[in-house]
Amino acid sequence: MPAPKIKYDLHLHTCESDGVLSPEALVDRAILNQVDCIAITDHDTTNGVLAAQNHIIAQQYPLRCIAGVEISTQWRSHEIHVVGLNVDLNSDALQTLLTAQRQQRQDRAEKIGAKLDRNGLTNSFAKAQAIAKGAVSRPHFAQLLIQEGAVDSMEKAFKRYLSQKGCAYVASDWVLLESAIVAIQAANGVAVLAHPFRYRLNTASVKRLIRDFKLAGGNGIEVGQGRQSQNEFQLLTRLAREFELSASQGSDFHALSDHSDVGRCLQIPDHLTPIWQHWTQ
Ligand code: AMP
Ligand code: MN
Ligand code: MN
Ligand code: MN
Image (cartoon, rainbow, N blue to C red; front, side, top):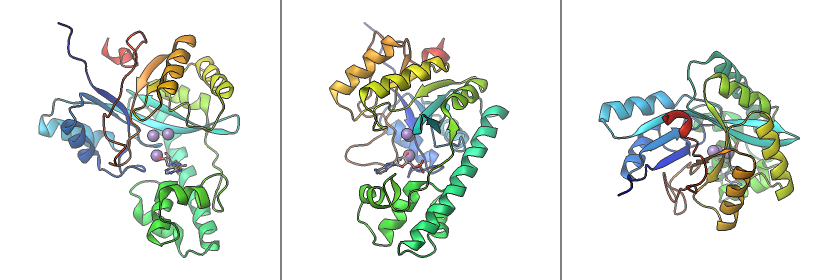
């Protein structure tokens, strides 16, 4: 009989960035859903990892929590996300980069707040800061816009205000794609290109991105993402093979909903090298 498959979810957010659950509640959810290995991958911070790991130890849960992070980067004027997995939390190279990124977030948030104030709101920055636990991110402003009755959904908050075409958009000076890979690997982690088809790039540009990512030393790409078409899954499988990249899987969970849950519908094809081979050997 083949050994039972280990259930992995290697892309998860907590309230340390723009997720809703605390690290402890996220761990409880993973246990409920019978996940065996998670990675906490908050935007530009590793602050949630230790709390999650301590909770697992305290509860004696049969769950492994990999230290991770999702870094916002720049590549040819596009914002691209790189997930770092199995990183050393005490790496100076990584933490120095993350501190600068969070400062970027804070500077950008002040400017977004000022723009929202010019578009009918009051005291937006302070109010968003009160919503956020860590650095203020765009979803915190989206939540504020809903609270203040300016829009009735996150989608509309982004479309009208916060996305590139929105009236309160502010560009960020994120680190270069290559620098994020270097910092993750300096922390003994592996660098994974997150959700390659969520950047509004056409297929040719996605290929160019994956080629550049591989050339810069990237280790893997997300192939299994839960909510994705069969077409996209197959294309990502082919690209992982073509560029000899390992395959990762993760839900990119932020909050519980009808279409998002920890560990839901995640898989990668057997013939690809799983990213967890880097730390289970
Ligand atoms: P930031 O990192 O502050 O630029 O915010 C980006 C985050 O906003 C992403 O990680 C998503 O969690 C969220 N996001 C981006 N676009 C949308 C959207 N259209 N609707 C809801 N959430 C979004
Ligand atoms: Mn997010
Ligand atoms: Mn992302
Ligand atoms: Mn994410």
